[in-house]
Amino acid sequence: MIEVQNLTKRYGDRTAVSGISLTVAKGEILGFLGPNGAGKSTTMKMITGFLSPSEGKVTVGGYDMAEQPLEAKALIGYLPEVVPLYPDMSVSDYLNFVASLKGIPASEIAERVDYVVKRCWLEDYRNRLISHLSKGYRQRVGLAQALIHKPPVLILDEPTSGLDPRQINETRELIRQLSGDHTVILSTHILPEVQNLCHRVLIINKGHEVAEDRPENLEHKLKGNQTVVMEVAGPEAGVREALMAVPGIRHLTITPRTNHDAGILDIKAETDPTDAVRAGLASAVVGKGWDLLELRAARLSLEDIFIRLTTAEAPVAEQATGSALSATAGS
Amino acid sequence: MSKILAIAKRELRSYFVSPLAYVVAAFFMAAVGFLFFAILTSTREASMRTLFQNMAVVFLLLVPALTMRLLAEERKTGTIELLMTSPVTDEAIVFGKYLATVTYLLFLMGLTLVFPLSLVAIGGKPEWPLVWTGYLATTLMGASLMAIGLMASSFTNNVIVSALVAFVISLIIWLLPAIGGTFGSPISEAFQYMSIISHLENMARGVIDSSDLLYYLSVIGTCLLVTVRSVNVYHWR
Ligand SMILES: Nc1ncnc2c1ncn2[C@@H]1O[C@H](COP(=O)(O)OP(=O)(O)OP(=O)(O)O)[C@@H](O)[C@H]1O
Ligand SMILES: [Mg+2]
Image 1 (tube, chains in turn green, purple):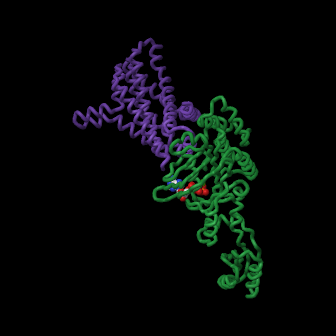
Image 2 (tube, helix red, strand yellow):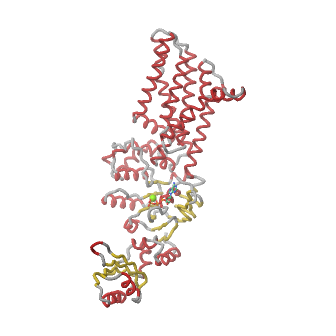
Image 3 (cartoon, chains in turn yellow, blue):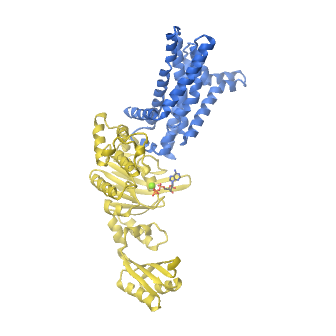
């Protein structure tokens, strides 16, 4: 349904998006994940035809965005990062306007407005001025305008930002229901959102694609190691030396505490996935006479994967990226 | 077409829900009315021609205030993203906006009909053909200034800059004959032709010359084309 080839956007001499390619099949939900400034919004602006790419091609429902923009745009419902609202209009006036802008026949507009108002929990707010709405309600109006013309493709830039926890859940549920006959791309910073909503994740960092796979596969790929969290009272350099000597350890991060906790070290160790390593770590500390205040194995969350994939220095990242890219994503 | 109308309708309602439309209309009527009665009482002669010239001067000041938000504000608040990702062409966006301002202009011109009508009421006999050509000329001139303002609004996302650019461009083509006067005769004549006000003077004499009509239509056409191009460039920023 959506095909993106080698999409690149340059602003002057800085490259915001560099060579992103992706395919999203009908009914699929693809999540864009990436730190601030990664290029998620820029990529979405190119997919929706707001920005023209410096290089590359976008095809929506078989229409090339550069060649047949009107046909392609008619298929897309888009919620931009900054919700495009006219503060001097009421919610229903605004939705009526968007409906005619999208080309809905006049006879069907009222019915469509009713539908999206219900769907986005705006019944009590129809006649409110948009300038009087809270942020969460504005976000809902934004979602409502994206849905108004029953678009087969939905591009949602941080759809749950500014919503309260209950609304976040309801919005996710809504997106899940819509995905049956809509194809969805959404961007987010919230990892559980990707985990329980998206069929596939595309992790972007500094404009580049760093991984693309099903969320459970990404987790699985990095299951080859364990993270051990420790709390030790001892000298930083000595502790580092002792721990690095333990067989099976791969990577160590030590953060000394300050203030009244000074002298205590927070340690995160990447190790082989065996109990022996943990035993080795414990005896290395105790054997030197330092106090071992805590030691536990942390489950590798998508969050850790995300941070590692988007943090250049972690050696595990390259490993994971390599394998994620070579695996063809299930579509 | 219905999309152009939708854009125009939204723009017009935003004029009329803000105080701006009423403030501008009130100021316009007060200024024109004051000048009209000043002329009427001082010369004892009801000169509609002077009235049209007065309206033109008031337009020069008011039009930038009416056009400054058109595209600049949409860019600033991000609503342009809604328009430009909807299945409408950039031309439709520009024409929709222009249609709205011209409709507002017609509303203002409609209000000023009270002046010739008040002449009738006090027993005067306006020369109606002159009145109508004057209205046509003033409306065309206002519409040209509106097109300049819309164009200026497409250049920036700052409404104040937009208004200033509109005012400066309008003022320059207004003053062209004065500027041209310092040159030799061919340049001076060319500048005379390019001036926005000289055509109004011609037409207010009651003569509809195709070169005057052509002048206004080409100013409007050029400005709208430049605006469409300028909106098109938003895709590439
Ligand atoms: N108009 C612009 N001119 C120059 N640089 C820009 C422009 N718009 C965006 N950028 C840059 O492009 C990069 C990508 O920005 P983008 O908004 O796509 O990031 P994002 O992934 O959506 O981030 P966030 O999570 O904060 O929303 C950033 O470095 C940003 O500074
Ligand atoms: Mg963004």
